[in-house]
Every structure is written in structure tokens, then in C-alpha cells.
Image 1 (cartoon, one colour):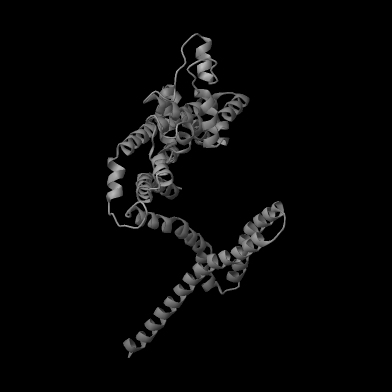
Image 2: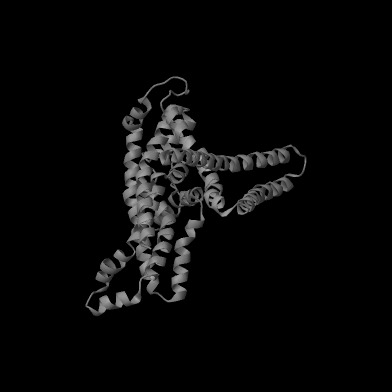
Length: 373
């Protein structure tokens, strides 16, 4: 009899679980869906009216940002009205569900579609299998692009980390006003876009066979009587000159993060090491580096990801010519210049596969640091 009584309870528990999860899923889909439809209706109305463009722009910003905020406040109010048991069950899905839906729609779905297109021909009509991937790993331009990306990875990332660390350590020991001035000057390039930095350095590296020289470096060489140097045409050194631009931009980022981490090291720890006879190099490598290891890993992986995706600098300075191809630039050429949809999609997937291991490692390290706290 007891077994017979437990069966209806198990059934009731299963149906309750099923209804609860269906309700959670419905809310997760309904919130971004309703948000999209309401915002879309508002934007369509703004598009079709005859108001001045500046008025339409202001209203569109207010409608977009304010609409989403109001929508979440309304749903939060509805959730707060539920009994505690159901409130606890539905709250994560109300707030995390839309984010997951947006992530799936704007990240997972495009990746899946790109994989599908990478298996088709140039016009995305005929299935060609792995032919585009064979091209991505055997074409001469792609081989050069992989080689150049490796150079960027080693020299670019290494230089940013080394220079950022050196400046952070030295600035930490300087008077406050000097530290502020140095950090401001080093961090300033971070405020410039990659394209803007490329334009600036075009005038630094600019070359003319005959005077006058408009490039800063060649003007200096000309002043001292030396012959002008075609910096962007000399292979493979032109890659090094491009990497210098990235180092100029990213060193400020590394410096700021390292400086904050170094200031978090207890002074007592360093003083104890000095009292025990450690010199400054030993304090740096045996005390400071191990203490900020997590920060070092995070900054390194972030710059590595940026380096693997580098495009703006190369495109602005050389367009990928003169042996300066990188993977992202080859993707652009195949997809938007040669209109090879299949090859472009395959190169995009290869670039994604290059970045994923670094991202996973970064997330694992971040998770381990969170658990430690």
C-alpha cells in the first residue's frame, strides 16, 4: 500500500518539476523576446517619422536604454510579488535567461552558421567539405600569416609584459607626481583607436626616395646625413616595426594593471626579504612575481588574445602587403575583397580555434583565483 501511495507522489513531483522548468524556460525566452519586439516597434516608429535627425537620435537612445531598464524593473517587480519558493526558483532565469538568450543568438548561432558556410564553396551553394580548411593551412599567404602571427605573439606580447612591468616597478618607487606623470604619458596611447594609431605611425615611418622627408624617423636620419629607410618595405623587419605600434598602445594597459597589483603587495613581506639579505632582483623575482602571478597570467592572456586578432594596425599601415599578412587580414581579403565566402568563413573558424584555448585557460585561472578568495 505504501508503494502504491508513493507512485502518485512521484508523478506529482515530476509534473511539478516539469511545469516549473517549462515556466522558467518560457520566462527566459519571453523576456528578451518581448523586449526585442517592443523596442523594435519603437525604433520602426522613429524611423518612419519626419522629426529632425538629432531629435530621432536622442529619442532612440532614451528609448533603447530606458526601455530595457524599465522592462527589467517591471519583471523584477512581478518576481517580487511571487511567494518566496517561486521567487527563488524564477529569479535566476529572469536575469540570467535574457543574457544567455542574447549570448546564444549573437555568438553561438553565428559561429554555427560560419562553420556551415566554411564547408561550402565561394558562393555558399555547393558543399566542398574540408577544402577551404586545406586552403587555410596550405596556401602560401596563409602560411606567412601564421608565421607573422607567431612573431606578433612572441615579440608583441613579450614586449608589452616586460615594458609594462618595468615601468610599473620603477614608477612605484618614484615620487607621487612623477609616478602620475609617467603613468599618464604611457597610458595615453590607450585612448587612441587602432586605426588612429596606424595613421599616426604612418607619418612616423613615412618614406620618400628624395627629400623632403615627411616621416619623423627619416627626417631625423636626413638631418644627420643618413639615407632614408623604407621601414614598411624591408622584410621581415617591417613586421617588427608594426609590432612596435602595438607595444606603444598596449604597454599602458599592462602597466596600470601591474602597478595596481604591485601596490597590493604587503611592504612587510618585501622588507623581511631585504632584512634576510635578498637584493632587489631577488625581491622582484622571488617575492613580487609569485605574489602577482594571477595578475600576470590575466594580463598576458588578454594581450595574447588581442595579438591573435590583430587587424587594424596591419590594414592601416600596409594592407597586408610586403610580407606583413596576419590571419585576420587574410580573412578580410578572402571574404570582402575576393568574395570567397567559404574560405573567409574557414579562416574565421581557424582564428576562433586559435583564441579558444587561451580564453579557456584565462577562465580556469580566474575561477581558481575566485575559489582562493
